[in-house]
Length: 435
Image (cartoon, one colour):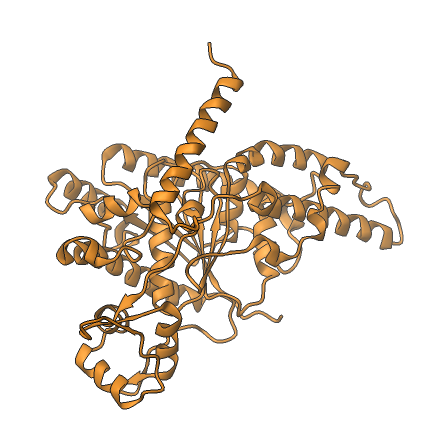
C-alpha cells in the first residue's frame, strides 16, 4: 500500500536527482547562463545580411560592439546585449533592424494551449520566446502549468507558490473584494451587495502588498522575464473553487488579464503563455487574457482527436463565461471572449512519415488556413535540446554537426517567422490604451 508519505518520499528522491541534472546542465553556480552568438549567426541567421557586408560595416565603425575574438581571429562572438546594440545602431540598405511594433499599443499576448499532454506546448513557448528575443523583442513568459517545464527550462526552480499565477489570482481576489466592499460603502444605499469578508488565511499572507513586478523574475536572457510556476501551484484549482465560494461576484477568469493590464504598455512587446494540459481556472485565465490562441498538436490520430475535444470543451467553457455578463470591471477584456487569431501548429512532424503527412492533410482539410504552413520537425537536435532543458537557440552549433543544428533551427525559425507574421497582423486589432 502506498500513502501520501510514500509519494512525498519519492518526490524527495526525485528532487535530489533534479539537482544533479541541473548541476550537469547549468554553470557551477547552478545558474543558467546564455551563450554568445558567432558573427556568422548574427549576420546570416539573426540580421539576415551578408556576413562580409557586416564585417565591413564593423571595421568601418570601431565604436560598434566588436564582440570577443577567437584566438585564430576567424570568428567573433557577441552577447545578446551587444546584438541588440548593433540592431539599434545599424541599418542595411536604409532598412532598420528593429522588429515591427505598432505605436501606442500594449504587448500582444499569445496563449500556447491544448489539454493533450506531450503536444509540445512548453517546447513551442520556449522556442518562440527565445526566437523573439533574438529578433529584438522584449518578452514576458507566463507559466500557467504546475509542471513548470517552461520555468525550469528558463533556469528557475526555487519558486514559492505565492509568486506564481496562483499568487496573482489570490492577490486579485483580495483587491477585487476590497473594491466591491468600497463601492458598497460609497453608495447611498449599502444594501446593493453583501459585504464580503475573506478569511485571515488569505488576507494575512501579505499578497495584497505585493507589487506587480514582484511576480516577474529575470532569466539568463536579458530581454526575457517570466512569471514562473512551481509544483505546489497545482493546488490552485482547489483553492480557486474555494475563493469563488467566498466571493461569487469575483470574476476569477479575468485575474491575470487585470494583472497584465496593470503593467506599463511599453514594458514588453510579446507575452507568451504556457498553458496546463487541462481546462481549469489557470487555463481559463490564460485564454481570457490572450489575444491569439496557438494550438500545438502532434501528427497522430489520437492527438487530432484530443485537439478536437479541446476546442469543443474550450468553446463550451468560454460560452459559460457569458453568465458573468457585465461583471468584468472596466479596463479588462470584454465578454464574449474573442481572439484576434487562432492557429493550429503541428509538432514532432516527420516529413517522410506517410502517416504524419496524412494527418497534416486531415488537419488542413478541417481547419483550412488556420493550420500553419510550417510544422515543427522532429530532429535529433530537438530531442537533445529537450534533454538539456534548452532551446535549439541556446545550444552551441559546435556541440553537434552544423547541418544537424541548422536543420533544427530552420524548422523553428520558419515556425517563428509565421507566428510573428500572424502576431503583427493581430496586433493591429488591439485597441490603443489610454494609460
